[in-house]
Amino acid sequence: MAPSNNQVSNITNKENGKTKSTDKSNVNYFNHLDGLAKKFMQYMYHPIDPSSLGITRILYGFLMVIDTTQERGMERLGLKFKDPDACHFPLINALTPLSVDWMHVVYLSMIIASICICIGFYYRFVTIWLAVCYWYIFLLDKTVWNNHSYLFGLFALFFSVTKANRWW
Image 1: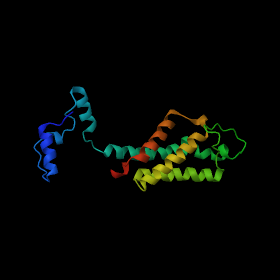
Image 2 (image 1 turned 45 degrees about the horizontal axis):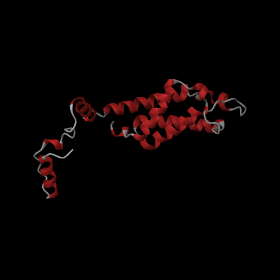
Image 3 (image 1 turned 120 degrees about the vertical axis):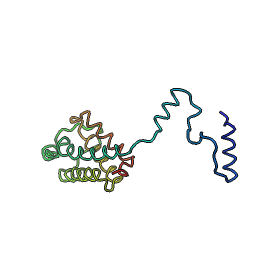
Image 4 (image 1 turned 90 degrees about the horizontal axis):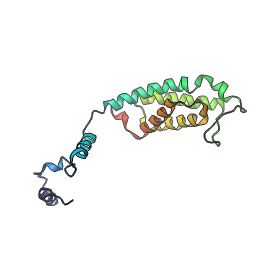
């Protein structure tokens, strides 16, 4: 679609070094859309308060502390991973559990990473670390998978690519 005369004059003014704008289309980028599509795009691009992302980050970190210690079986590590002949059902057959001592280190690092996510400390590193450790433990034994396990894993990936530590 060709630009209107006002848009052409604004482009020309910008090329000449002038920044004066007489057209409101510079603010509203969706003038070429009609009806429902325009309303939807305006709704999707309107500014929102980012504090909800910060609250979600804090709650997620808190829930991951609880999930790591209780749901992922930190208290049963000795029973679960001590016997090398124990039957595990990994999704990927090449994925093998570490020794019990190293599994304790992995679980402890997940708890520390979850606390760091709560307070926003070294956020990018700990979210990636938590995502890697969580998916390792998650894929290690498919007999303990639950619906919320998938959700926590997806949140781990989501928070590793967002900047949720910028708020609160």
